[in-house]
Length: 105
Image 1 (cartoon, helix red, strand yellow):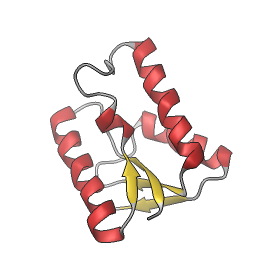
Image 2 (cartoon, one colour; image 1 turned 180 degrees about the vertical axis):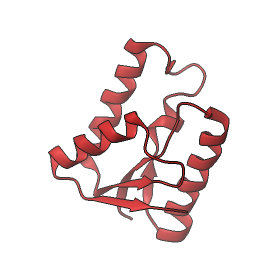
Image 3 (tube, rainbow, N blue to C red; image 1 turned 90 degrees about the horizontal axis):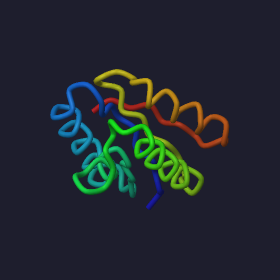
Image 4 (cartoon, rainbow, N blue to C red; image 1 turned 90 degrees about the vertical axis):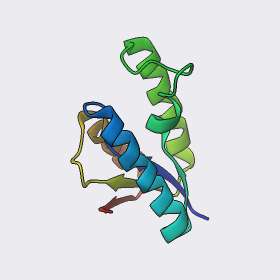
């Protein structure tokens, strides 16, 4: 299974965006036989990191970048648009030479 870093919106309409991200994870695994990491779903769970705390947010972003270095590609789900955080992750992938697939559900 290819290892993929999944990007989708988180901030803003968080409830809607979490449901969307879960559907994206499901699509990666069930439809495309990929092994995704969706750090914005994992690291923002209660008791892990507070996305509103700049220090904790930076720690989560740094951990996500470590995964990106190991990924076969980044997958960007765009149905809800591209957030500033997603744009920063895309730039990091481009800088590292990681292939990027832009997708819609």
